[in-house]
Image (cartoon, helix red, strand yellow):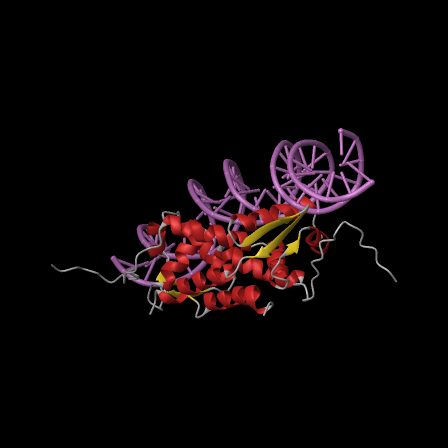
Length: 118
Length: 118
DNA sequence: CACGAATATCGACGTCTGTCTATGATCGGC
DNA sequence: GCCGATCATAGACAGACGTCGATATTCGTG
């Protein structure tokens, strides 16, 4: 059987590795979307550079320059994706960066970028 | 000077480390936003698991189940943030994962999450 | 130079998202 | 038991985003 490629060279970029499933792609995107916001990045950075006990919501509102409900919204998003822990004490609520939460994310990105090639 | 804290215990969660600047937060968010999309994640994954020469656009359209302009749009976003390289040959265009692009991103996340603490 | 193929750009449309104000829920103190 | 403080929820609104069809652009072929 002769395959006539002719003169128009096909692009030839076959994919051997298994394609990422829709579910996996959406799961990863969900977590990344949670981090892909300037304010939430600022929040994470503050949590990262604070005591492990966490940071009180009231101490986030002013420095971020946001209304209190907006801060609550962002914290809810971060908590919903498991990046952040929530602890209530009296009327105060303390949010803290979950141990290795960003580390895992970081690892996922590294794997996606490197592992499949080598 | 006596500070009367009274009985209502303040929350006391001071921040010592320098806060992330608005610009830095937005720059990081811009790159993360580029990755925080299921289709773009799929594209990156395909580029990562393909030959270093890159993948032809025409070989991305069908597997992704998107219209050709949509694929072009996503590739433009990825290219715009420096995550992906573009190489044209004849009428074909090949996109390839930029060396250590995701590695750098991954490192940034790790730093944000860990470095500031210790 | 006309034509077909491969990409990019344009404009439009529906949806998601970040922000706010107003209100509800919960807890402590008086 | 009322009241103030802290945080969460609800609803509204503007802007950004992903997708598409239609069209422009570029390149190689005959």
